[in-house]
Length: 165
Image (cartoon, rainbow, N blue to C red; front, side, top):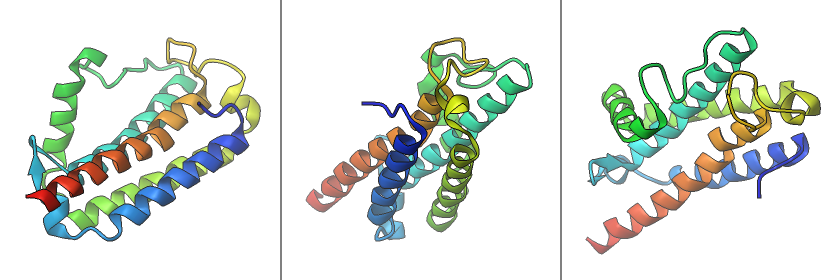
């Protein structure tokens, strides 16, 4: 169930990030870089970090009355597979430590964003420019807590598969 208040959003964001950090802090380079279906744990963490910046950009563009491109200019939602592959290619030179740092930096930026907004800004109506009914808080949860949760699930499965090999 999605958060509907700032307090709930902060709680779930902090809780899911802490779970993810606990999980990835013990992963070494070999496990993080091992590919399965052309994707590694490092790729998943880089993806989650990147999508935080996408959300923050969408919000800023909407507030500035600029066009908001979902998920990004030149892509539609049905292009996500290609878009995510392009993001992985852009981040291919990042090592595991740099990717973890990118996540930490972007997670802190997301948390600062949430903390800087009041209840009205987060939950009074649709996010400006989003062209749907999701509130800013719901978008923030999707970029943060929901992505952290799905990353943790992916990583646990990937580590289990690596142990079986």
